[in-house]
Amino acid sequence: MNLLTTPQGVPTYQTGPVAVRGELYATGQIPIPGLTFADALDINDQFGSLMRFPVPRTGTIVKALYYDRDDEGLGKELWLFGGQNVTLAAHDGAFALDDQGLLLVVDILTFAVFKDAVNGQIGLTADVPCWYRAPEGALWGAVKTLGADNIAALSEPRIELLIEAYT
Image (tube, rainbow, N blue to C red; front, side, top):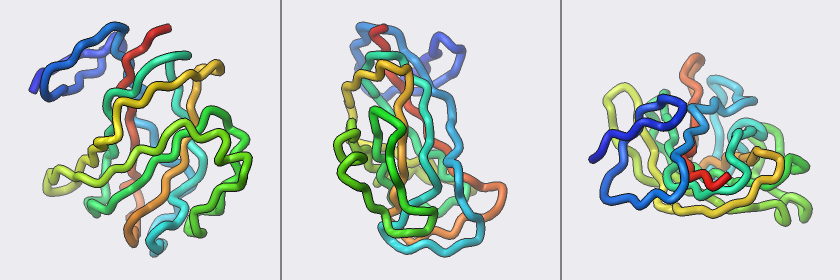
C-alpha cells in the first residue's frame, strides 16, 4: 500500500502498482444531501438527493470511497450523471429514473466490499476505472441503497472520488 498526496494536499492510499499519466485529483469527501435521519429505508430506495462532484473536465475515476460513518456496511450504488437535469424519487422512495435521466448516465459504481474500522466502515468499489468527460467541470450522482439503512443523526455518509485528471 502506497501513501500518495494529491495536488490539493489530501493524503490517500493506493494498493498495487498504478500508472499515472495525468495529475491525481481528489473531490474531497462529499456528504450525501437530503438524508432523513432515523428513517428506515427499504432495499433499492433512493438514498438522499442529487449530489454534485466537482471534477476535472476529462479524467478517469481510479478509486471511489464510501465513508460509512453509521457503521452499517450495507451496499450502495452510485449512479453518475453527466448533467443535473435528473428527476429522482424523494429520499426513501423507490429508486427510479425517467428516460432523460437514463440518457445522462455516465457509469454506475457499486460499493459492495466494506473494510471495518470498528466505529465505521469504508466501502470500496471494483467498478473502476471509469472514463468520463464533464464539460461543466462537474458530475452529478444519486445513491441507491442495496440494504435496509437507518442513518443516525450526525453520522451522514460521504463519498470521495479519486481521479486521474487529463485537463
